Image (cartoon, rainbow, N blue to C red; front, top):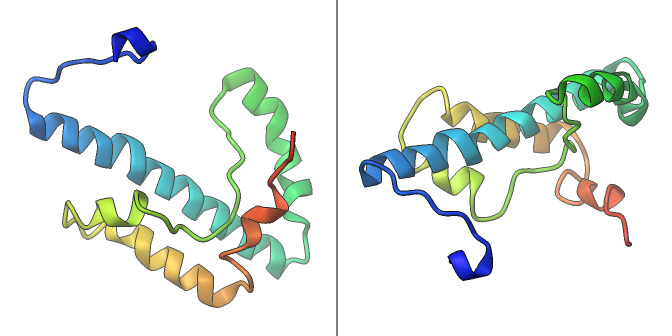
Length: 120
């Protein structure tokens, strides 16, 4: 891995690494996507353009680096939701519940990301 330029780090025990993956990576991403889903539903309720609304945070993000704009698509794939099943936590399970609720409220949630794909 070092020859490929990939940094590695040894953890004190396997559980630490597994919790890091679930809590600090995939669940964190799930919460960010859930927040974008929620703000999209609220924006639609007030007939406000989601992208225009999020322009407000661009300057803050440039300065602080803590306001990333996420795209309000459906959480699918093989990481976020399946990793929730590795740790049965009632609060983290809200990620899946909110995702499913969002897909019922907003049309085309599974293809909304195509709007944001840029061909370079």
